[in-house]
Length: 226
Image (cartoon, rainbow, N blue to C red; front, side, top):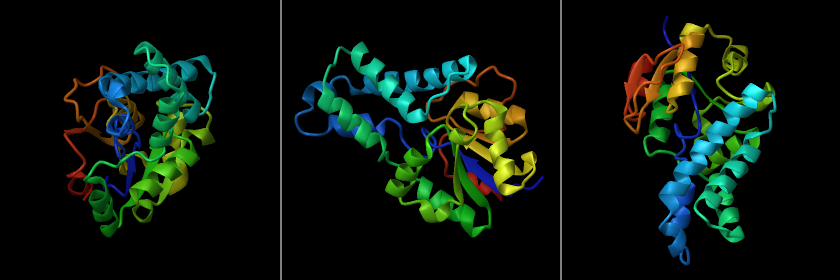
């Protein structure tokens, strides 16, 4: 089935989740944080995702902003950093995450060929709006779809259902793109065509689906979707 609709995960896929910690580490007066930022960024992301899965399994949903704050608090404590100003700065920067450099041109190319484009994310509508605006990609996205409309995090099927409900497309008309291996595997099992942006060179997750394509970045997405 030809691809009509290209759907992207947000955090780690279009937006660099390490950017907040990296940028804070470069600011004057953050020398002590600069020594720790890679570990804190990795711990923050790991706990952020872990908390979404645990809350989904337990049926105890809260929004992604709360999960993001909780994950950061764990990461800072794990590195023995108790700095309220640093915490607030990191959270502020998370609303302004940098897009990966190939993102704007890739999305423009998709729109020029008539593809529908959207984000499907755990993020809240407000978080996604801030990231999209900061990256300057509003004009090349048709929509941002948030799990908040169904009240459960990925990889629950009801999240992937949002795509068909919004765009009226069959599952096999969708190219779903994510940097999260578990997200791509679940989307493949759901019936989407999939591309995994495996920036870290990780093994494929052993789940109920597998990615159709494995990429190192997003550059070739327009060719895949053509």
